[in-house]
Image (cartoon, rainbow, N blue to C red; front, side):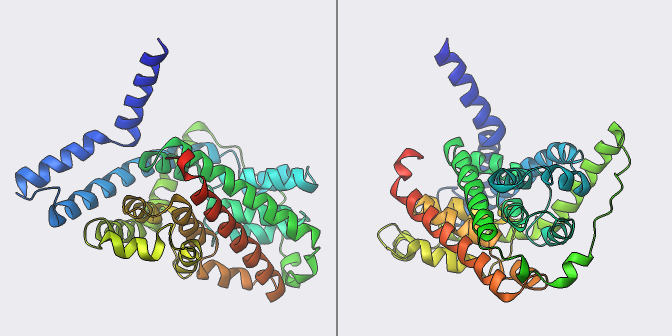
Length: 339
């Protein structure tokens, strides 16, 4: 009985998340229509690009719609009111958790940081939210499961939340409120509650979120899939493993440094991560790259510098960087539990 249930859920995972049917269909297209072997470089690159692009856009559209419907119950003012009820590490944990269900990337989270801080929320809570919001996203969890497996997806969420909670807690203990720019405290979120939304309002909101987010990330996804196809089919494995392989003790550090100048949502980094893992790069190294891109990108650092002083910005960057490095090396050491 249990074996039958396990096989059923495995079949659902393969068909709904991994979309093996789509992979088979694209393979048939490449080999029968284009006349190219899907196991060779050109055919393999076309298969990788078409399959990953279509799969990511289908999953992303469905997930964004569903998650945005849930997110419609958490407008900024309501989120602030919920967070204001908690202090200490409880507030940091709640701030990190709320960051996972709010539709904000690293750059669009900055106005929320201003509003929350000016409303009197502890700085540690707002930084836990600021770290978690772009780093851990419900849609990214399912996409990670579709590309890798559920163990890796869940582990990514757990370590992302831990990093957000620890980062906010450390900043709170250091009492760095004085390093927030004074004008931040003069900006207020609207105190009035947003009008109640009807079911149709929420459906329209979810539809608009799909349009907005897909419109914002589609180019990054195409670039990411293109780079993934290049890595997967054209760059020799020995070159990649020499730089990012687990035998290179600096692989996690290199991946983190590479990720910082990049600016992309996690959805654009997933195809690159998939290709790197396929070439033998450690899962910890890949997660370090993904986290650096989403949490430490230069554009978000530039925006954050406008609202905090250099000492707080450096402290934030150092805490997150150290956390990413620890996570990367720990995951590489215990990757046999996840793969």
